[in-house]
Image 1 (cartoon, rainbow, N blue to C red):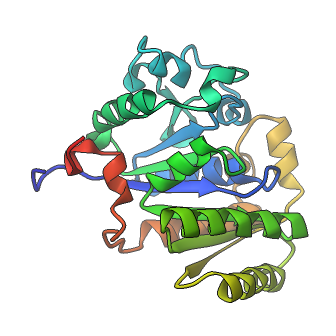
Image 2 (image 1 turned 45 degrees about the horizontal axis):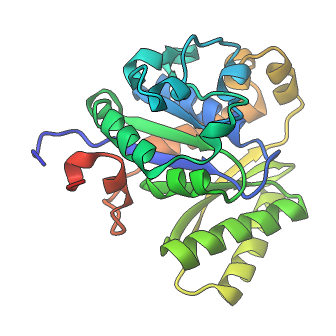
Length: 272
């Protein structure tokens, strides 16, 4: 690979269960990163139940289904969102997209390699659960952010996700983000519960506390308006925390990952 070739930072935002606010995390974090001057693309990787476009109030003409059918390129389907972010929208209600074939995955890699120079950060908003597509899109990232809420079921399902990725795919480093916590004390208590279970049953695992996003009644107001809470309520507590998280991530010195999973995405790093 040429030394000058730009390698984007790839971050998957995933969860063990639905309803923890993963997509809201993705779009609002993307908005804050873009405001800091980053070229940010959101990949809606919930391929048959798309919701990034719904949250943003946009109606894309084309989506990833057209890419996987070979009808459009990723550049063709990319749409602009608030704050200068770009979105690769998914399809909705298309059962065939629920389980990608190996050929489709390889074709997608080829398409992604064409976007590398245009991107600083790619945020992959995965579907919830532990199906093959979720695992695939989680594995191709350099960084994996697991989102969970204070609910006990969220904790259980987040642990299940980490267990599968650790035991079956040898992923040993995760970043943990607690959503809808009423205080940092509550968020840290959830994180400690997760680490206690992981330390007991899983070996050589690194769980990094990324932070928390507070519960805020302004979020459902923004969702109903199909606007970002960070855009609609710029001085709210939740927006301040998103900005803090964005600055933290933008300023990080990211070292190359030893597991090489980014190789799956930008084929210039390995021979397909």
